[in-house]
Each structure stands twice: as C-alpha cells, then as structure tokens.
Amino acid sequence: MSPDVVVLDYGSGNLRSAVRALERAGAKVTLTSDFATALGSDGLVVPGVGAYAACMQGLRAVRGDQLIGRRLAGGRPVLGICVGMQILFETGIEHGVRTEGCGEWPGTVERIDADIVPHMGWNTVEAPADSVLFDGIADERFYFVHSYGVRRWELTDTHAAMPARVTWASYGGDRFVAAAENGPLSATQFHPEKSGDAGAALLRNWVRSLS
Image 1 (cartoon, rainbow, N blue to C red):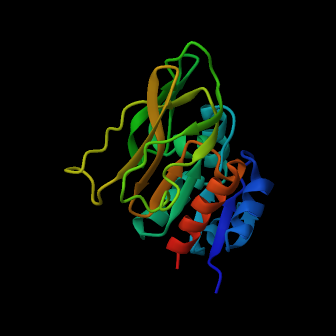
Image 2 (cartoon, rainbow, N blue to C red; image 1 turned 60 degrees about the horizontal axis):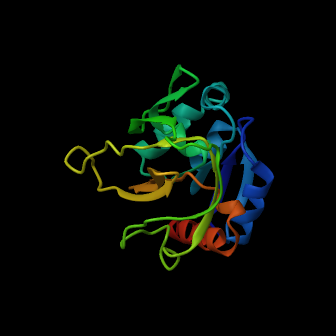
C-alpha cells in the first residue's frame, strides 16, 4: 500500500511539481494546509522558495511550525526542501534581517560566501556512506537554486537523540549543508523534484523509508 504523504500548502514552494514527483515516487499525495490531515499522514513534505522571513510568516499562519514539532515529537517523518530545509534551523539572516526559524536544528542560515550568487544549476554532493536518502545515488548531481545556506553544522552527536547524517556541497570556494538526515527529520537544500533521475531516486528512497 502506498504511503500517505502530505505536501504542506502554506503559500510557498513549487507545490504542484513536488506533488507530481512524490506521486511518481510511489506515494499517495495530498496538497493541504489542514493541520489534522498533515499531522496524521505517514510523511510530511515542507517545500519552500523565496525569502526566509516570508516563508516563516506563511508557515506560522497555518501553524506549520507547531505541526513540524508535533510530528517530530511523535517520530513521524518530515522532509524539508530548499527554504523548507532552511526554516528548520534556529535562525535565518537575509539582508541584515534576523528571523527566528523552527529551531528543530541548531544553526544559522546565511549568505553563501561566493563571488556570484545565487548558486544556480547542477552540483555534486558529499554524502555519508550510511545515508538513506542518497542510497545508490551518492555520485549523482542535483539541482540547486539558492543564495543562502547553512555553512556550519552545529548539532553534535553528544547532544542529539539520534546521530545525524550530513551531506555537503561546495560552490565558489564555500561549503554548505546540501542535505541532512536526523531520525524522522530529513531535508535537502537542492530541489529533488527538479533533479531528474537522481532526484526521483532520492524521493523513492524517502518514500520507501515511510513503510
């Protein structure tokens, strides 16, 4: 039976393409902002594009921050994509404005230290050998569109209930978190729904993990 996945509709993200990509990955997908439906689903996907502060405003308007916290407290899987990954961290700083995030992971989202931003296009990643998301696709390329990222991973294994698997990418001489897996919480800075066969395989890996 196909896992039941909700793509959270909070006014941000490439929602329809995410829905289609997850359906192709084998999930039964609902696009909604309904709290109870999203809370009870097998998996929750939180997309996001644009400014950090705007995404957080939209997320809070549908109690998305509470939803994510409730799901994770119960060990129920969440996948963040692009800015949907960034808002999982404590803080975002854009154009000198500091915005409080969901705080599920410690750390700050800040401008990538490169001469040319945004980082737009295909890039390889450095995935750990035990990654679930990158199983069988660690050497592939993925599609990024962003000017900001997490340049320091601050969650240590000694302070985490579950060890984290962190995947990195490099651009313009800087290094940033490309993806992270930490118990029921997973996230990608790139867009798997725009990453061709490799992105499709990653989403299949995640959907299979819901069973």
